[in-house]
Image (cartoon, rainbow, N blue to C red; front, side, top):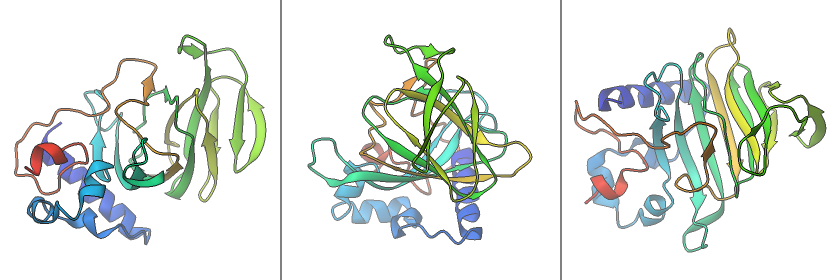
Length: 227
C-alpha cells in the first residue's frame, strides 16, 4: 500500500470521527517530527502500539478488505507497561470487510459506535483451528445469549455490541446501503503479533511503498521510524 494512500485513509478516518463528535488523544495528531521529539516520554504508547494502524491484511484492494484503526489504550501481556485492557476504534468504508479470524487469548466487545449498521458473521472453530461451517454458534449481544446458524450475519445497530470470545471466528463489515462505520473495540490486552488466527493466510501488518514523506507513523513503525 502506498504511503499516500495510507495518509489519505487516516485523514478520511479523522474527518469521520470529527463529524461524529469523537475526539482522539493528542498523539493522534503528532507529526513524525513530534514523535521523535517526544519519544522518551511516549515509551508506554510506543511499547503498547497505540496509535494509527492501516491494513489491507494482504489483500490487493483496500476498498474491499481493510480498515483504519486507532488503538487508544493497551498493555503488554507480561504487565510491564500500560493497562490490563485495550480499546480501539475501527473505521470502515461501506464495501470493506475484515477477514475471517479468531483469537486464542483475547476477549473483546465489538461495539457499533456510529455510522451505519455493523454486520458480524460468526462461526465456531474446530479443535484443529479450522472453520466449523455446520455447528450452531453461541453469541452474546449486550449480555444476552442466543444461538444462531453457522455463517449468520448478526446485525449490530448503533450503540449495541457483541462479545467475541476466544475461538469464535468472526468477520465484520458495514451493512450495504447503510453507510460508513465507526466500530469500537473494548478488550483484554491486544497482541496483534501473536493472537490473530486467520481462516486464510493473511498479513496483519503490510509493507509500505514510500511515495510521499511520512506525516504520521503507524503503530507498527515506531521502532523503524523514530530512531
